[in-house]
Image (cartoon, rainbow, N blue to C red; front, side, top):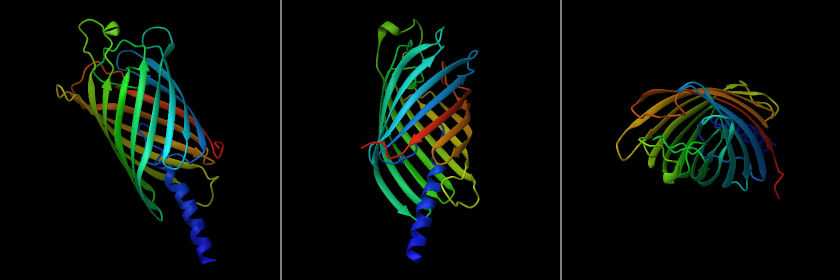
Length: 268
């Protein structure tokens, strides 16, 4: 009987623990549940030069406990009327997992390939709408009861396309990315079942550096999140630059609003 109580506590504790790893602007090393499908709709609004917005529909697949994938589409009014910009494929593979009661450590490798019809005149490489290219990197995530900490290191390379180059504008080439993310479970105070709403608070530090000329930037990104019935997720965050010398950034001073729905045990 004691073993059954311990097992129930472990299952519920693990469910609660994963909540604060659902970062807003980055991905954790943990994966979505195996054999599950997630559907997201994200809206981003940029205030760098006037106001522009981007909408990102996304489908996610949890193939097994170690492998998951994303497929995204990008729509925006960056170049005039609202139109389809392109798409992206993302895959993440968990390479390390160390589990304890109410704590765990994860490490994962990821890769992304993106295509965009936008003119590639920003030095900052953004593979979620602005640039065509590929990205690869490493994520590590540590859970400590109600607090989850995560770090990411990545390398991105833009695909060269002279036909889309605007005269006298910098050609994006390559970029090093890095982030430190934290998530804290505010509610519930005591976890009893999967149906309880979760309220999570996030704070992320997002940075990039051009390895060719050393230009870089660092953003801060606070956010809040509500998770309902362990299936529906609502995110609201804002990122703003606190240091940097990189011009022509579209993601500077950007809000993010997202809704996500998850369907478990639907893949054979």
